Image 1 (cartoon, rainbow, N blue to C red):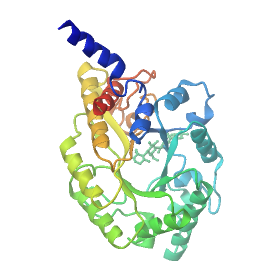
Image 2 (image 1 turned 90 degrees about the horizontal axis):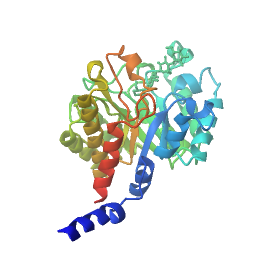
Image 3 (image 1 turned 60 degrees about the horizontal axis):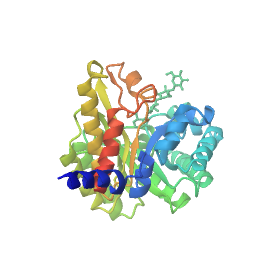
Image 4 (image 1 turned 90 degrees about the vertical axis):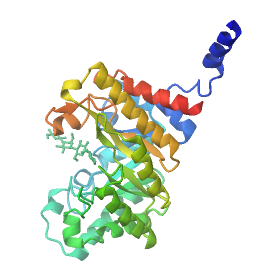
Length: 345
Ligand code: G3I
């Protein structure tokens, strides 16, 4: 009996596969997955020893610019590109061995006024779009290897969303954006990205039909990103797995691109809220590990100190990330590590 105990102890401490992996980053490298976070400008403006950057660089092997590459910020005036922030961002990421997910070329939000209010013909807007995509991709060729080309084009009811792009160009703006992106950098991976499409429903069916058609027509799309903005206790692992697999069967990558698990305000910081959130995050990690098509698990931020949720939802929910607002790892963080360890056994 004593030998059995000693053996188990020695195995646990010394031999257990993955023992040396201590951060999400180490595990990401081991499994060849991008485990990353959306980052704000603190990444490039705070001194290098700031906690924000220290933890980011220690814990993750990938980043996504939360807002910096959005049309409004990077292309604020006709023909004027503002690359000062994005250049610093890309340099900082590469210096720290962080893979970059590019986000985003075509979206109905975060447009500059000149696009929002401009009167363009279809040909003019197509040319603006082509130039926008080409200029950015050419600048970061060899540095950014994947992009969300089109974001949130389908509404929850499965119909195509009205937007400047759709209204002026027509529904083929989506195909055009992918073709332009492929022409700009044929080696980059190109994604369609959306929310509320993680399980089979009217919206994900519409996305599925759209990308299936795109594949048939040789439109260069490489994957569909599932954003994963969830409320506490609403991650259904089985249904997500089924949905991911049908997209993978089309030969597409299926990254989880903007994960956060929002906690209702009356449960923030409670043992039950923290435990449920940990459980939800573990499900996402398991899904990504068990599906080769899931090349990335990206969180939409990593510390509750900086998250879009409380502002956007008038503080009715929040605390959605894996580190608290004082940069302490939450049970969610440890459940991710534990899931990675279990996967190695
Ligand atoms: O920087 C200004 C600040 O100077 C000003 O005082 C303040 C007042 O409102 O606004 C600040 O800008 C805000 C910016 O976030 C930076 O915090 C914008 O108003 C706000 O609209 C913007 O929200 C971003 C949102 O996309 C819209 O672009 C969120 O940070 C960002 O997390 C969110 O990200 C989206 C993804 O791109 C697509 N999927 C959904 C996801 C969450 O909404």
